[in-house]
Length: 207
Image 1 (cartoon, rainbow, N blue to C red):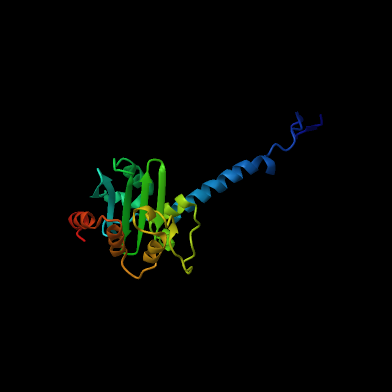
Image 2 (cartoon, rainbow, N blue to C red):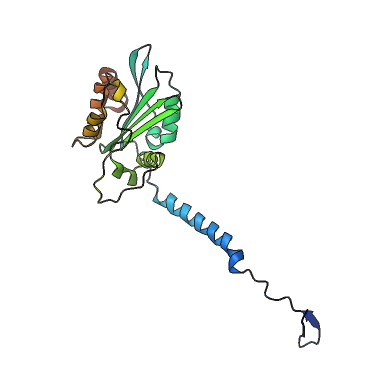
């Protein structure tokens, strides 16, 4: 072991350079990068839709074969996971369908049958501005589109095929130049929930 003497004449062992090297710092740098990425994701997440933004949130199901429509809590229009949880609690014949319309711009359909969940977003561009649309994109593993991209619906276009709404008709509705709340009503009528849906929406949302 080498030795050296300081100006006071005392000898010390040469301990070498004990500063952390690049290999030692790499895990910490990676962790810092992950934390910064998480912060960026949170900053980029859309703000919740307000009650003024939310057109409607309605659940459709059948009980003893009869169509039933019920209003859902407003906050569910901002949280796909909780919307799925609430739909799963509905004891309907063959599950339940959730319909959400935001700012007359887009709609979301969620169908829950036990553990089987299907979702549809009418316009993927909405995922850049609205939380439930972002939730759907995340659920589907879809990348966010560019603002200038000619986007369309994403998800399960056959979500209502077995109850009267073929995939090609639903795709055409997604592309229609109408307010999304009006399109949702057309969907409700097509799957034979028209009167129940209309009564619920008028009473709960004033539409």
